[in-house]
Image (tube, rainbow, N blue to C red; front, side, top):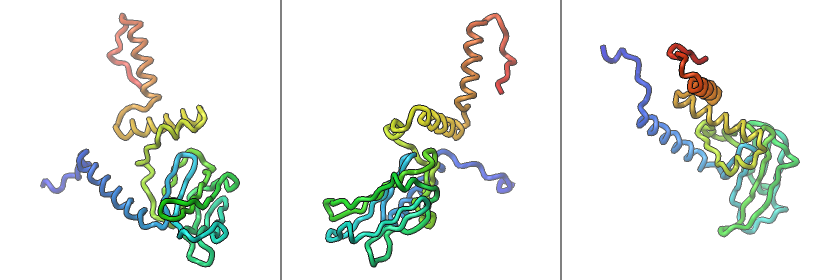
Length: 195
């Protein structure tokens, strides 16, 4: 009879293990790409190693609002595909930089939507789990006050939801009720409902 029970949701330890396995698979998929990429809420940066004898004129880089094609002229492109979301091509750039091991093609893409995490640079590449992204606060400080406040509230509410706790709006109502209770100790709030 025991096996007819619904499977219990994973314990925190099991969840941690599943997350670690998913992250490892994700890391392996990403490491196979011919480029490395990072993102903030507002932009995407990718780098690809290039042979040391290559010059800027040997590269072919085409960045449009919806896609990218970049590589060494006459060779298979390093990246070629469609973005998951549009970018601002006029604010996006590429450079060829000298590194300790040779050269590197560095591409900076400015996102049109400053509130969306990208699961991949191009839609044909393996995805990452965007719900696991925890942005650095230093990057949040780059946003203007209103946008930053909105992003922080969204992140806070998402974390609260994951933990089954009240979001910022519900917490505000509860704090108001507590303040009111403190100011009116003579009233009975035992049947007060939030919602």
